[in-house]
Image 1 (tube, helix red, strand yellow):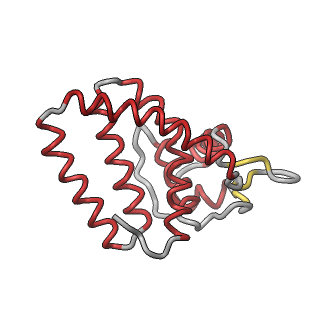
Image 2 (tube, rainbow, N blue to C red):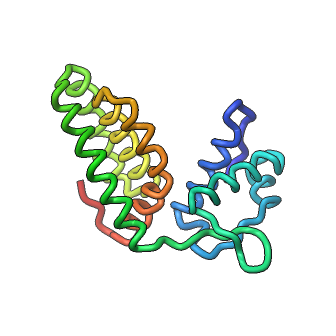
Length: 176
């Protein structure tokens, strides 16, 4: 992990950095999380790390480890299926609303996001693929015109990011 600069959203940055390590397979399920090591690796104090770990624990990404501390929680197939069931409904609504608006911004910016996704596929980088996918979905949510879509889906992106990385890591031939 690289050192982070101090900014108002430091806890979010720390959370994202830890999640990137989990999604990237650096911290696989069952890995013990050591607060002091993370703080040192990121160049931050223990307080934002502690807050970020609490957020990830509350989101189910981390769980209490036997004895003491935290560990990376395993992905549970039923939970993954439930997440995708929910995404199908909410994202179906987002697509329908976005199509009804059919504005110029969709054509202009959407094409660039699709091209960025293709470049991410060509790079073979799982992190770039996940980031490109997330940007595309954020754009789709904004096109829907319903601010609750993005807020609702934000709570699921932590797990979705992790699942996408797992699937892409296992699939050696990424597709468009």
